[in-house]
Image (cartoon, rainbow, N blue to C red; front, side):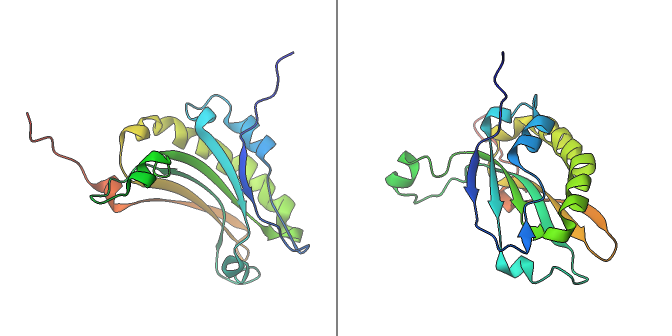
Length: 167
């Protein structure tokens, strides 16, 4: 019998009883099995008080994000930073706490819309380990429209093309 692979949880914030995490590591893992970065992924569950202020308002708020944080080379980085692997490339999935009454609605949208898109995004970005900087795919929920939207972003280093002057 083969053991089920579950993406490890790197962090999980305690949340008030009025909130809930809309999806767990097991469901995320089942949806993303087979992506090239699967063994490098970690999941983090966060409760940001400043985001919680937006619940029940017309302001969409983040519910899930997948990101790649590549190394950024500092001219004066300490030896400790380099030795500690602090700056090593990371693939992270972040799940934010949502209002408990909306948990199942948001979970359904994440399962049917976000996770398949995350799988495609990860497959199309398998080459990211060769790059500096980072990029991300962010999913936000709009309570008034009852809509899940997504947006991509990247660091300045990600947009910069390095020129090899040695050739």
